[in-house]
Length: 312
Image (cartoon, rainbow, N blue to C red):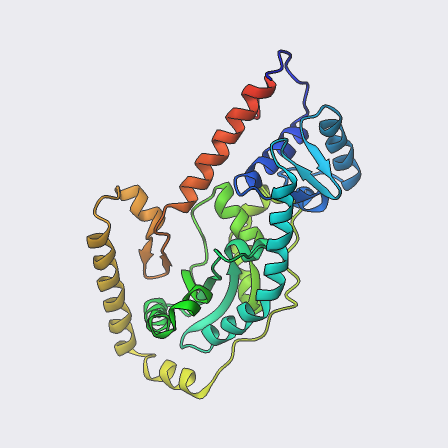
């Protein structure tokens, strides 16, 4: 049913709705506290509760226990979320274990969990995604060694080793200033080297414009980067010109391989999905970021039509 009267909404209420719709792309209902943290508004919790109550009273959102839901969400969606939360709790020790194995490789300075697990969700279809911070000018050696280790894993364990994003500690700025990248940054869970995580967020403090209420992760799962003998030995051996040449070579052959494998991608799409430079490696084969943002815009349009409002 389309409402014929323009709803009188505050800008705060509009941002609350948009936050609900973003996570509704994943059919993931938020608790009231999570919604507060993920709304792009600077507001007290008391005022937030008042704004949210207005939306609930006007049947623009609905509530089930502690959860705030899009009107289309059902008990099944809520049950799926809760099962995913239990899955995340069970898999977290494995994610932390693999984080520390990854950190034992040469030139790894810091490790964070990203993806669904960083939002407290894991099911049978999920992977464990890692965001890796490397030493300067050795990112591609680091990545190549980790990819070789990935190839040696049994297939059933490869989902625990998804190293899709690498960034160098001397160039931590991420240019993708959009809600998707902001969400990923805001929800990172540091597991190795908390200071590296802090530096990453400080260098990309643009994300706080969308997440003014989201606190940094406390780092309770975080440890210092291990320094086993082999890691220290290889870092020393490859510290000079040999390491630089090898790093340049791995960048060159990897970029050439991806360009050959995905010739159909436009330059902008290739840059977004396979950004490959000395200080960054980003590999997202299915254009997930663009898909999420597109679906979010579509949900906003559908909502505007249904309730005769503007979410701007």
